[in-house]
Image (cartoon, rainbow, N blue to C red; front, side):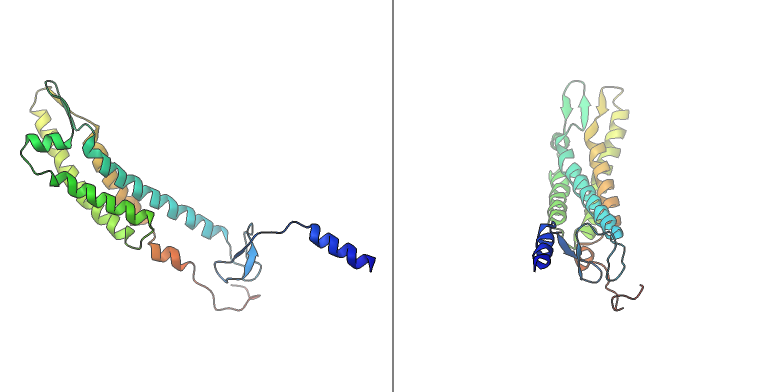
Length: 198
């Protein structure tokens, strides 16, 4: 009887381990496990995929944020006028502000989709990145051409470079990212019963 009480005390004094389901066989395993004791799957690979997915999502959001912020930054410095952002340049050229607002609105859409982990994030990021790269890239080419003819009275600033760089970052991160549906589906579960080697 004393042995049973002592056994009960020794079991109750052990710290309880946090448990989680194995992503491959759904059996309960310890949180710190690196290999499933039931199906033998390596769990470190799924952790690497999760880290890569988070970094790709961060890249998409960072690229979209750069596209969103770039029109407000200085695009060109003119000796007499000072720093001009994209909206100033569009007003000076009697051009519609929609050329700046459309990529910005699309960038907000990408940020919302990435934060919500939508399955559309990948395709949306690529398309919006291409649109932003075209718009900002064409403005940058025009600015470089005009500044060259200004004989040192104007200089291209950081704004267009950040816009184009953000668009390229968004395209690259979106093209390499998994979709939200891939993330939610998880790994494919093997049909083999527990105990057999995979």
